[in-house]
Image 1: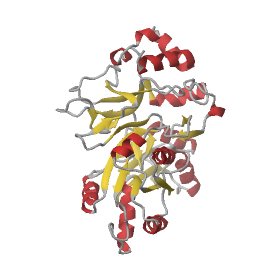
Image 2: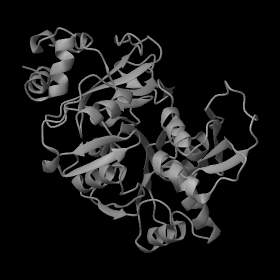
Image 3: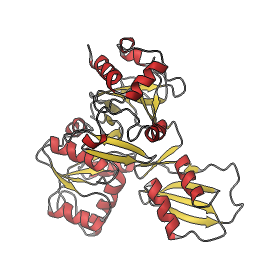
Image 4: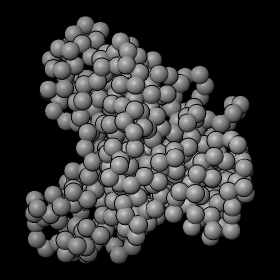
Length: 388
């Protein structure tokens, strides 16, 4: 019995949600023996998780362990609750960090948030597995962060490329140079697209930079290994590219498809899970390698590493007593910005801004505009970022 057969049988025996999905598709575990057989089972869409989790709290009937037995429980926008069942590299990012040459001799500044989202813990546990020393820096506090980087001799950075740009700019203003006052030699990026400008800057400063792709639900999906174009698929999951409408797997030359992941996790066996991300296979290369995230199947837009969803934003704005709005996502000084224009005859209060931030998990600029300024059919989320 191979890994796929084992996890399908285990999920069928232990997961209420998976049994229901199999029964609805008129399938038995013996019907799914291979990658090709997986396509008999409809894709479980990420956008359906909030509904499932409300019906069967807290994990939609998919977890095989009680919530009280979990090590940690996180919350992603949606809301979606994500379990962590074991302490050691639960999200499996050590595979990618080792490919990026992180090791036990590194002191690494982890600038992902140690909060309701799991990113900080994702990389903390992966770095500890490979023996690196971790500085749990989190986000913000630029002056303090560059002080820590200088005084502790930080050799590695983990976080978004835009925040490293901010730190490097702040260090240069003080006259601190990489290779002299700063010992930074390597970086690992995720959650944002890495621009060509950032790649060139890292090369100029002799910072060996890599990038990876993962989600709060699935952990590591693919990562840069510089052994070929695009991103190498993780060995710890089964990754497919599927037609967003039919769920059928696309051939290697099949164009863009949804990233669909099957995890071999007995505690939270996500099988045929649709991430909502669009990608395609690298052409002209033997084997499957992802080109990266090319867009979203649903209405979500990633801002500062967090997905802002139209439905979610519309719900909170309407709850606050407004009806018509438009959100513009732009990029200024290497940072994502979201400006929300709300039709209102009154100024928007700080309390209203705070309530919107609580839901979308990103700090917005909110402006009141005269009623009638927006057309009824205007797009709610408009992304005007240009990646150089």
